[in-house]
Length: 194
Image 1 (cartoon, rainbow, N blue to C red):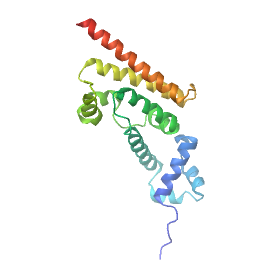
Image 2 (image 1 turned 60 degrees about the horizontal axis):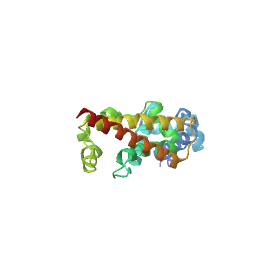
Image 3 (image 1 turned 60 degrees about the vertical axis):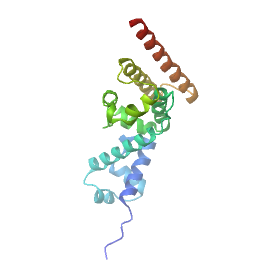
């Protein structure tokens, strides 16, 4: 009878989650995982060919976690601001995962401009926004989204790198006011063009 496997693939992945959340993804290596699991490195390489395979699987899991987190964006008249606020909330709640995906260029999902341009493939852009009165075929709406994304990515990055310390309520108020400002400016520009 073969010996019972004591360290499962899920145990290894759980250890990588722990290490990444506590120390950052750069700290993930076979020795650190083994230390976390209180075992040798053998169980790791029984489950994975090499560390690249393990890291790639983990990054895919983090992407899925981010997408699930982001799917809770409240769909109402403040949808554009809510998208930005949710992005910043992810950075606050999961700074090491945010760093892994967006500051180390590991996110394999659509970049922001692809997200906007491929709106028919995106439930938020093809269904939810038009129902809320947003026409993303318009240059103005794309501009609002792009401005919002650049703005909130800056805030999220400043928070994750500890360059900015702010209360979440203050952040949401600033984002909402900024989005309203973007909308007002673009509405004014549209009126001036007519």
